[in-house]
Image (tube, rainbow, N blue to C red):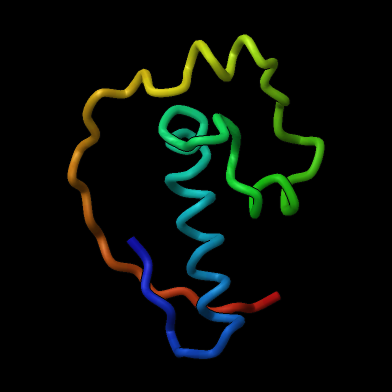
Length: 80
């Protein structure tokens, strides 16, 4: 996944956002407890993301039985 380019809070935050946008956009609705996109995506993309109905959340939550074990390390730095 990603590793922060430094231990600065901004870079650590950028690392979390990068992971959320790469993996969380599809994994969180299916695997997450809330059945929704990550909070960083909601705040970053705003109304561009669709909203799930309660029926869609229940239908999708827990539907992925297994995930691939895929790791690739990338560094991220806050540039905003």
